[in-house]
Image (cartoon, rainbow, N blue to C red; front, side):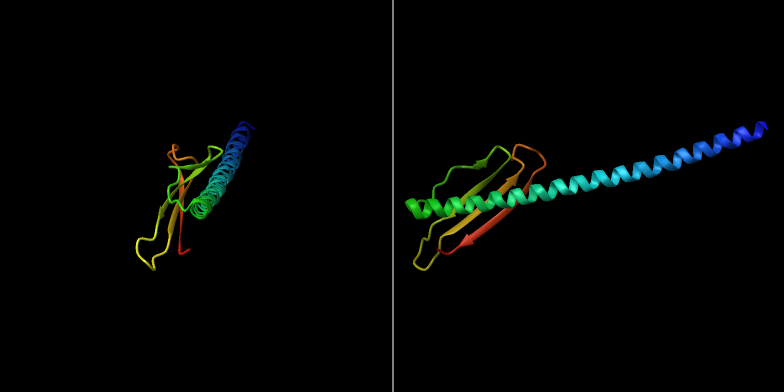
Length: 121
């Protein structure tokens, strides 16, 4: 009789260990998936921030024929872009606009960067 109590205790510990291992592996998987989902969202934001910079550059160029833009175009303090424009120097050259989008805001250490370059207008 006294040995059966020890067996029940051993089985209980083994069962709890198995349950703990399953829960731990599921939580690690869930955490990894959440991080990947956040990275996909940040990547999309960075791409659209770069796209916004291209559109702003085109607007300024066709409105004022200027290639001077603000240092950083920011959208609600979460993502921004840097835009550089190169005017045609020689006949036959095209306007070149390069926009680099950041998400989250560049002050954060972990940020995603996406760039777009358009040429010819």
